[in-house]
Structure formats: structure tokens, C-alpha cells
Length: 409
Ligand SMILES: [Zn+2]
Image (cartoon, rainbow, N blue to C red; front, side, top):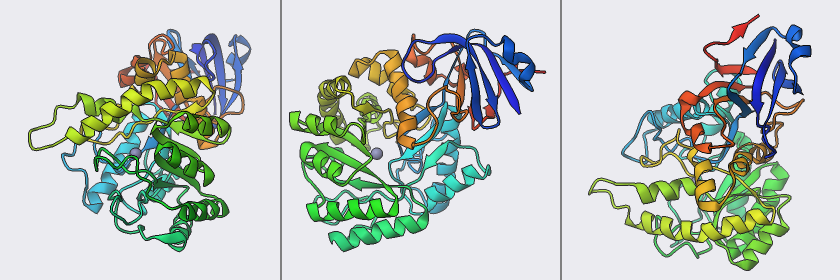
């Protein structure tokens, strides 16, 4: 099957200005990108006219919790769900994300052990619609006074316990483990400066994950946490809000091997939330205000130094449901000083690099994960929040959402 998309404005994911052109897709890949479609027209089985629309790579969310139940389609008042409902919610959330233009997800942890590898495999087999998924398991927080309650399965202490965790994950098909390395003020006020693992444990997890070919994602707030995560070879660091100058230097020094996702989505949504009287969000709101103030300085500093900064903001709470993930691009522009093109690059090219797949760019040889957007997101990234303006969603060369007026020849 060869599909030609012509008369498009093309934003290729790299951050360079959009240009007018055409893309030929063969099977699951982009075969050609040209500024003039004429030579390609006779080569296509299907022609899509994209006049007035922008063609761009599918988006990548770098900090996803599919088992956090709430989406724009279904709000759960409670956070923890019974197993059957948890699976239903995760399956639905994967489809909701794809419906909203996200073709790849990097999991930041789950509320159940085997649910994400099972879902990732079902998506690959075409049994349920969803983005490409790097699956994870329960977020790991070791036992102790400051520990964050993330499930009681894997939280023993010492290098042996953490090696056993990595072995278990390797056996279950998990591709990234999530370590709660810093405490969490939003859940336990005053703990964000705490370090929950020992150097010995971090050394053990780094070696074991490397040997098993599993990536590490870390919940980190302080410079000490950043250094420990980098020492263990972590692939992606979240938050980093309390990083000082030395923390910035450590991230800059590791910028070719590490990604950073601040996660403004949950903070902004917490500040906006108007919970019912029986729900106390005061700790969450205070923590969100602190973090946004710090990150407003930190994130631009890291961007200026070339650190790859990605979108993804802990969606899945009732006040921050899945499906609103593209709000992160607006937050990058409003709070972190990104241009729209830079925010789009954070959601596409850098996301593809995080996935370690040929996605996130409109280039020959790349997988055909593509969106057609009504309008120009390089002028205003907010249009990506309106799923009605996502006129076509393609993953792997297959249309998840077809243009109504698609013309077939
Ligand atoms: Zn998270």
C-alpha cells in the first residue's frame, strides 16, 4: 500500500520552519518527502489532499501512567481501582491517547504488575488500539519512613532486593523500571529533599538493569538525586525541580545520554483544581506552586544548555485526565519560554530519541506515525488540544483516524 499525502504544510519534528510539500508512505514507513508531489502522484494507491493542514509526526508522551484511571472520557473519583477495572481503564486510556494524537508513550510506572507488558503486546498484535508503549510495572519505592506508597510488592532493602526486582521485570517483558529516588512533597510534605535509596542500591540497580537491557526512569528532585540517577545510568529523569547549579552541570554533562521531563501538566492542573470539600489538595497545591516557580528558571536554563527536554505531565488524575496531554506544549511555551516550534520538537523528535525508534521526524526511512492538523501548530500549539482538529492520525502507516474527504485513486 502506497499513500501520498500532498499539498501539506510539513513540520518535520526537528524544529526548523514548516515547508510546503508531499510525503509518500510505503507500508509502515515514510518513503519520500518532496516539495513537489507531481512525480509521485501516479505511484500512489491512495492520495490524501492536505490543503490547509499541517503534517507533523505523531506526539510522544515521556511520562505516562496508563493505569492512573481518569481520562476525558471517564473520570474516576478514586485513585486505586479493582483489578478488572484497572485493566479496562488502561486499555481505554491507551486508545484515548492515540485519539488525541499520541503515537508513542514511555511509561513512568503502573498501579499493577503485569498489566502494561500485556497491553503493549496486545497493541502490537492489533488487538486493541493504542500508541507504541515502553511498558513498566509498579513504581519502586524502598521500605522506610520516607517511602512513598506505590504498592507493597517490590520494596525490600539492599542490593539483593533490587537485583531481584530487575530480574523479575526482565522476565515479565518490562522495558523501563521506575524508581522513586526522591521523596514527594505532594504526598508527604517535607520529603522532597529526602533520598530513598542508598548509593549501594543505586549501583546495584544500574548494573543489573544494564545487564538485563532494561531502562531506568527516576523520580528525582534534588542535585544529589540527579547525581545518583545519572550514576546508575538512568535514561530519563523527572521533575528535578530543586536542582542547583551543580545539578544543572550534572545534567548538561550527561545530555547526550539522558532525557529530562519536568512534568508541568500535573502542577498546573493541581493549581487550577477546585476539588469538592472532602478532598484535601492543599499539600498538592503547595508543592505544585513551589515546583512551577523553580522550574520556570530551571527548565529554560537546561534548554539553553542543550539538554533534551520532553513533554509528559502525570496525566490520569481526576483533575488532570488523560487526553489533555497536549496541554504540556502550551505549558512549555507559557511557563518555560519555549517557542511553539521548540515545544513541538520536545513532543516529537526528542520523544522519538527517547523511544529509541525511527519515530518523531518526517524523514525517509522513518516509521509513518503522522498527524494532519487543521491549522498551523507552529503558530499556536493549543490547537493540538482539540481532537476535532486532528483530521488524520496514522500509526505505522495505518490510519487510526481517516480524513473525512480522503480521496482514493
Ligand atoms: Zn509520574
